[in-house]
Image (cartoon, rainbow, N blue to C red; front, side, top):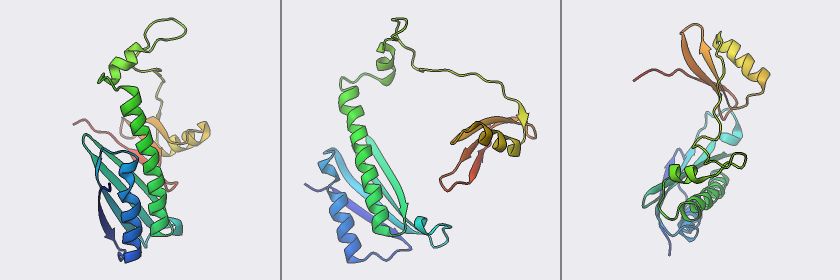
Length: 187
């Protein structure tokens, strides 16, 4: 049984070879998880990408009853980006099956399961959050926060109080190695 596959392209000509390869591989995803109803594959080419290895992107989205799983990868060729995204999707499906079928098959919520986890040290039920952390935010500029982030070895993100705006901001490393800044506002 093969699930329905929808293929979209952006800045790429959809050849018969690419269409056959993608349809065959993505059509077999329901062998890993029978609940998959259909899949959407989007192949894109970004000729302005800085790195040659990031010029082609493949995004796979699978839809089923009550879930959506998505995987995106980049590579120098469209089919290799698709194959990488497919491998990633298969890992996501296995993780989803583990949560769905092995974790809470009896319909309990994540909170109910977490409340039943017993702390080995005290013998008491463990709280929903395994660790809470408090720290003092010193006012600094975004440039100082970047230096602090690098000095502390925080690879993914750094929370700081912006001295210029008097707000809490989050500095994070983007996939391409550059940095991004989140400036939250109350809604």
